[in-house]
Image 1 (cartoon, rainbow, N blue to C red):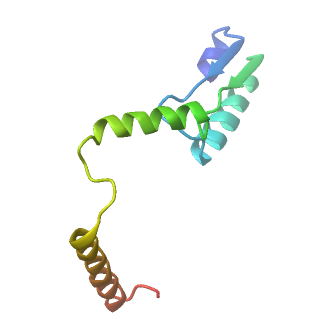
Image 2 (image 1 turned 90 degrees about the vertical axis):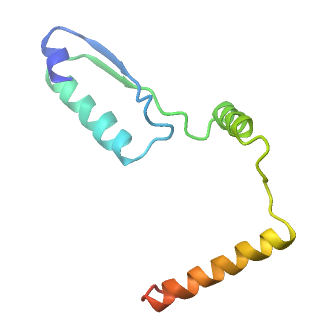
Length: 103
């Protein structure tokens, strides 16, 4: 950001395509600190474009991608499968508690 501003760039519109939702890294380090550095180095306008977060179109798109790639996978366990999963979970919980996990 500093080099861009010092090189004469006056406006930056910044997106973070590697993030699907804003977090401390995007909000503090990128949005706030990058903005400060850019403006302090002579830039005039800095715009952070928020991540997709809980945008209805994003959630719908993500669900569609998941559904396409999960075709044929059971989405809900029933009968013996469900019972086996529950038993495994109970064994795992007991094991974790035995190793000192908080109850």
